[in-house]
Length: 448
Image (cartoon, rainbow, N blue to C red; front, side, top):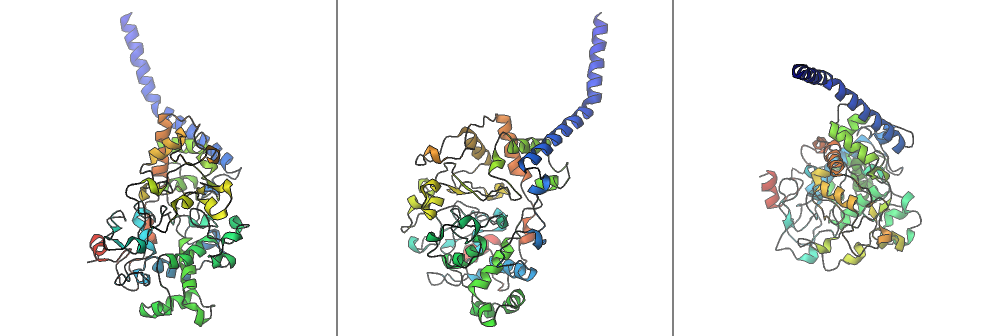
């Protein structure tokens, strides 16, 4: 009798092993079928195409400002200008010319984030590997430092928004209709430009950049401007405005369209691991992430409050004396004056989060898993934020530890485009080091 039982046990184990591959195949099919159904639901019936980012050279498919059509000549010029430290020609302190550029606070190594809690333009020294080694020069007066009171947002997937900055103040159409009272110091809004274009122009003033005819001729950019703006009168062609429009056109092509999730959406079901697929299911279903992080860029055009902390609570934060951090903390409400908008900030894209390494408008998290757990728990980090202002998607999710792990892996791995260096020029026209050009940065980057 014992011999028969032993043989039956061996036979059962053999059959189980024989069918294991089939079982995994069936299980995988069920996961893919579940994902397909959730994608259809989340897209309003459109399916995978709703979430697919276009190719970066498919200009007709990329959302653009009608006042600034994307062309290959503008993109080529904008790519150089974004990285060109010779644009840093209007510093507040003598001797700091040509040490910084847009890319100083938006380096590719950090997925076009700053690589640190606060980006530092003029007055910063060093760079490190991806911007984390840029620090305040102790000889720089704090009131002259170029540092922002909120975390630098990524440039990835900017095309899928019509306003810019965390509070959305840049942009004179769509989302910002009815906010004209706050445009006093934003003349480009009155011209009808969208946020990306306004940011590229206003950013030159805010970050002490100088693009004019002198810059164009000194650093051999005339031919590129001529190709990019042949219809603009020559007396207006080499300017802050056209430089900004070129940078904006290039920024619109910065798309994380080679991430594994994108490949999966295009039909390669092997592009994601089993855990990444489980994480995608949480993202689209119980995690409620897709309710705000939707569309190709995984971000809506709304503003939400999740109670993140601000810069004033961090020991390493630099708050300039002329900054009202209480006003900054009100986010969208600080711009619109509408108390219903208080403490709400623009939804960020979720692509390449891991490369930036800092999360939340106040940079109060350094772990993606911690952000997921925080959202799941629903206890506000910022006690000042009224509970009535918190997003409906904050807390009450009841995710298990396994689901938190799966979602974290999806956000970390499936949404990471590992080939962003394709957007970086081989060299700048000036020949200067980039994305930073002070003495220590040149050593860190290997330019010297």
